Image (tube, rainbow, N blue to C red; front, side, top):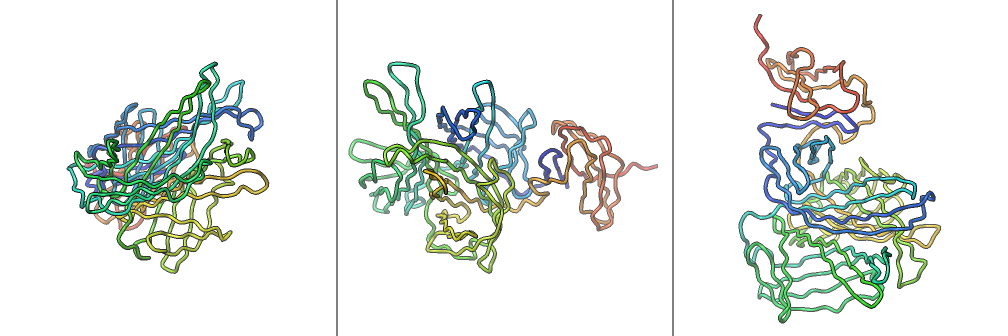
Length: 458
């Protein structure tokens, strides 16, 4: 037994040896980053842009995690996957119970004399399959969700900026006879719904290949559960004065054959990325205004009620903890909140990942909120909650452990997750919860773990 917690703005507890939860493997992570500069008036955005990227991530069974920028350590805490980089920055990441899809969002702020610069990063990752798959493994109906924004670069000056943003939902049917149809079901694109098209498809080299005449589209970033893929697209359009860049994040999930209420019961995590759009320009110009995000625990109960507990948010007024009603409609989860707003989540074939796109009208103005939300049915990784307001940096944390008679427990501290030192003396287990206090805790950040030891003999 070896349990770990971190003492900072978040408190964590994990089992770090002999663990059953192993997300190791090769991952692909898709990012959609919205950047914007506000003036001293927080509601006035005078510059914005976006970026998309696909990144390789390696998660090792030795608790190392590596991406293109850094190497760190990972662990589980209170059903969340956590990554700690070399500078001790910790990300709390919802991950599915089958350990093959994650989704989270974060932001950073920078300020100077021109205003406040903010970056909001929405990210979805899939663990890649280790072997090839057949067409029969992925045939069926897929639901595609896309967020697109258009930025421009002037061909005559250094000017660039944001023009428009929209969402869309498509349906991709992969028939067992090798044909497919792709239909855009709904969109907020001012140009309207695209026409359906069809073609043939096959699988090879761990990807799905769609073919229309001499054109082909390869879908490569598919999860090991063969029910989720991510894709980022960049299209450009040129004229004499400027170049438009259409940047899109796209996530698709394969529809399950059935979905019942018992499949939904339990603890999920919600990740929501909200884009505030100014619609005063009419149907042809939805101007970016702001972006918010929130993450929280969602509990679905057998009596058709549920609760939401927000544990991280950039705008508390947009994401509020509370109760809701829920029901399964076809292969979707329908949630009805306290204001009787209805939100539907399409659920993946493994029944542990859900996606929703929905629009809210902002009261009191010409604004709409475009919401891209995901649900991850969480793995069973017990621990302390993701945030505990009763822990104060610089105080002497009081840390508990469930003990068993005949065993001895030693609390240890680290500042880098590499070198560990004992805190106090070993505690003799007696079958109860016992506490230890670190009277010399650092003022900024520390990590703690319990280990089972054999006490020194006198």
